[in-house]
Image (tube, rainbow, N blue to C red; front, side, top):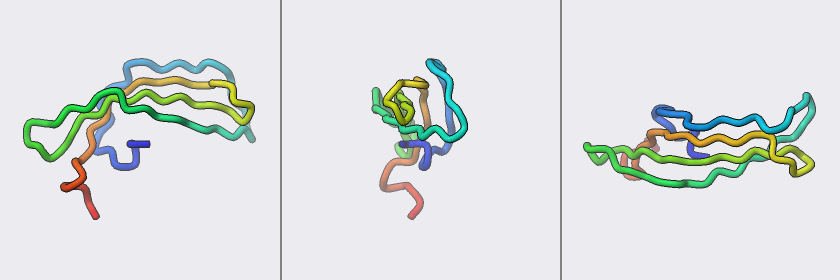
Amino acid sequence: DVSGAAIANLEIETLKHKKPTFHGDTIYAETRVLDKTETSDGKRGIVAVETFAYNQHGDEVCYFKRKVMVPKREFAPA
C-alpha cells in the first residue's frame, strides 16, 4: 500500500463498508494504482488508488478510492 510513504492523504472520493467486520476477523487488502501526477516542483506525486478489503472468507467488506501525496523515489527518505 502507498500509505506508509504518504506525505498527506488528500481526498477520499468513495468509501463503502459493504459487510460488517467482527473482532477476530482477518482483513486482507488489495490496492490498485489508477493514476499518478507529478507535482510542479518535481519532488512529489499525487497517486490515485482504489483499495478492496476482504475478510478471511474472501467476502469484500470495504472499498475506497482516494488520492495521496507521496515523495518521488529519488526524494524519499532513506
